[in-house]
Length: 123
Figure 1 (cartoon, rainbow, N blue to C red):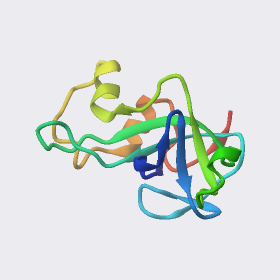
Figure 2 (figure 1 turned 90 degrees about the vertical axis):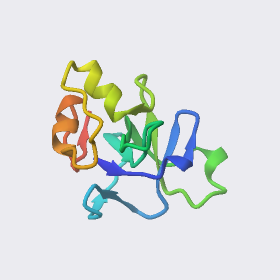
Figure 3 (figure 1 turned 45 degrees about the vertical axis):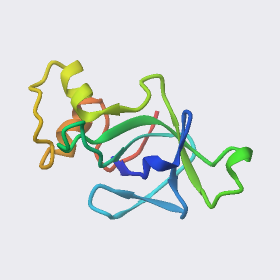
Figure 4 (figure 1 turned 60 degrees about the horizontal axis):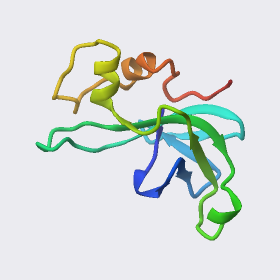
């Protein structure tokens, strides 16, 4: 799963990186390639201040022409699931809903969204 700043969200286009590589949950560099399917997350909180990460999945691509004025090198074209909170994904998968997501395991979350944590694969 890739770390992304969701302040760089433009409709269904999320800026993933201003560099040639992205970052995984541990801050390690991850090579990005056009056409790969990936999930991205950003730390967020619910209305009561409890951690509740934002999650989005889709295809990694170069930025569209209208976004090239920014330093974006890679974007995520978000799929039909859109941007969701981690608690929504957990609830949708009928898993236990918890408000203590600070220590939530990203590998378990990736499995619940049919994604490989930190790894990108061709779809």
